[in-house]
Image (cartoon, rainbow, N blue to C red):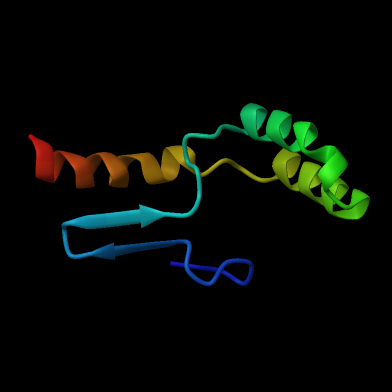
Length: 77
């Protein structure tokens, strides 16, 4: 899987490997705090665009969580 920003942000190899570039465990609040902590290292326009994205987009952690759980349970139960 990927998008224009990141060509490959996840992939799998059969039922043995699942790799994610994203951090579905990072909720919106944590992500905004992390962004604010790194503000001095980010171009102001990029910072403001990022804050706006976090405030307007939905967090996908709950969307991907069942797939991660299903992947892990098939191998470790």
